[in-house]
Amino acid sequence: MSLEFRHIAHAYGQVRALEDISFSAPTGEITCLLGASGCGKSTLLGLTAGLLTVQQGSIMLGGNVLADAQHSPPPEARPVGLVFQDGALFPHMTIAANVGFGLPRARRTEVEGWLASVGLAGMGARYPHELSGGQQQRAALARAMAPRPRVLLMDEPFASVDIVLRRKLRRDCRILLREAGATVVLVTHDPAEALDIADHIAVMEAGRIVQFGTPRDLHHAPQTAAVGAIFSGAQVIAGERHGDSLITAFGPWPLECVLGAVPDAGPDSGAVDLLVQADRLDLVADSAGCSVRDVHLLGPVTRVLLSGAGGAPITVETTAPVNPGEAYRTVPQPESVRAFAQN
Image (cartoon, rainbow, N blue to C red):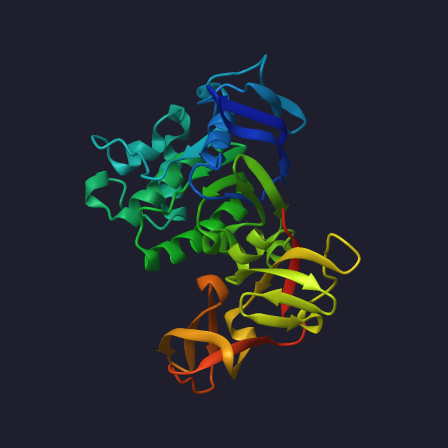
């Protein structure tokens, strides 16, 4: 069943945590809430789980009201599973007892099957402290899925696991969750994690969703410079259009470098944010250009940090030799820059 958020708003006193949140998490797919700490993503998860009361708007499940300002069932009365960042296993209970906790006695025979599904076959007699961090998270996932909830909420479930294991764990979880057919909402602050596991991503900023779409949508068609920078690793450069040029702190750039149209505030000028990859910039020696702040070899390419007018930095990755004692101007390659109107 799809999980739908309709005009959700929430405040903690005078602090607005969420503002007019509306989107749908499709049935049987994984939707990520992505954003920095304090953007409201965990608040939205808490409202869905019943840990917080909806103040404004409604949360729908399969077309029926799951929660709104007039109807707020407690967590145990919702068909929702929750996986916390630290797993939150009961330390005095075996792994099998943890997974079977809350299951009717007739279904306790399913526990070993759930353990096997997350790669913990034969470990049911162990206690949480006898498992690694990654194994504890797998056990927490099995416990959340065992009651077969229609919705599974995951709050930064891989954050406490080392980075190498994290990659494998989230890919294994993606396959398991997709096969189980659960509607999943996962909170993360890591763009790589969102791209790795999600079918849809809601990018959040200051309590609002700035863009919602598939990983491909967000990577190839960002609607803001900030979203583009998150998913492409590109840098955002301030510029202003003057006639057939873009004036930047790193010299004039030709309009031919822009992919698509250049938004502007008038017939021939306007402030814009420019999104450009470090490896799509060429360097040309120019005594009136930018000074070199740092040169660092990265295998086949050299990373160069330049200081533009006013001290603004820009990074260039090049295979050409760079003399730290010279000055350079930057020249973007054709159709390598995305331009966005400044907010």
